[in-house]
Image (tube, rainbow, N blue to C red; front, side, top):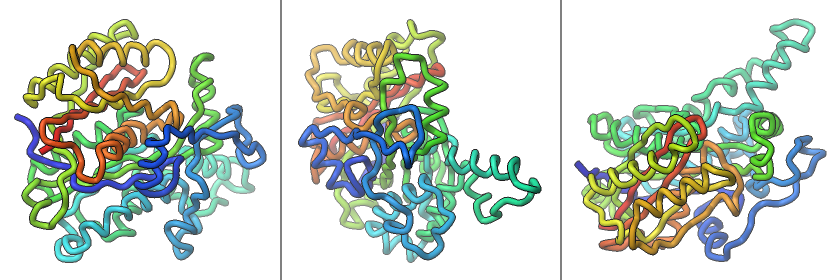
Length: 362
């Protein structure tokens, strides 16, 4: 059964800047946000990265209460804050009816490793900054976002590698259908840090190290079309479905993703020729090539516009598929997808999973 839920607002923070407008403008210009790294600030093996320009917690969240806030939490709080204005009335009247589902990698790897280091290198293991301990748990960003913006509904953290954004969206759909909330703020966030860079470097094959790292966040307002209309919000896209499949080795990526996309389109009643935008995870090597070939196999006769975000923003890891969806909405314009139009977001997780989500106009 196709979903009756829609996306009626979105908020993005990307290496193009804070807010939806910088992402929309950067994509329209085809601008590259990857730049040389300052190795005095970031002593890492990568030469380039895509960072959110000028972003600090003090600047975008406020100086009060942010002294110990780590970067991924600040990105998430800021991105969620970009949507709070759209639902201010509902939040004030029934804060428990708004849920938050936020995807992350491992929380803040920098915070986890710094805290661990302090416990090992200090004069005593307990000579650590207690105020920084909450940063070491994976749900810190989601929890702080809810506290900061007074969101009192269900609060969930999802982690699933490169597919995190799509997995968070799938969870949000189930949460709403289960009657646990009236609307869901759903998205993902990822930070750039020295420790994340070193872990990525040591965990990658030689050819994969050429892809710079990026960071950012994207959050979407998911609700019923009737609720969006009643509140005067424009429906930007209907969530037609999201599905996932496993594969055993890289040779199975193409077949797994082709089947995944076809089954999602079929279940949603969407013809391949109506797909206007495709936003693949992309990257380098065999997985990216298999991903694009799988999409081509699943969309015979279609001629969609391909949005290859990774080429401009680097590897944004847990935030990748959420930012891919944000890029689709940016490309669709202020009124969203039109009647008869569809969009496809795909991803391949190297650990053995593929996924996709289909969106349509209303």
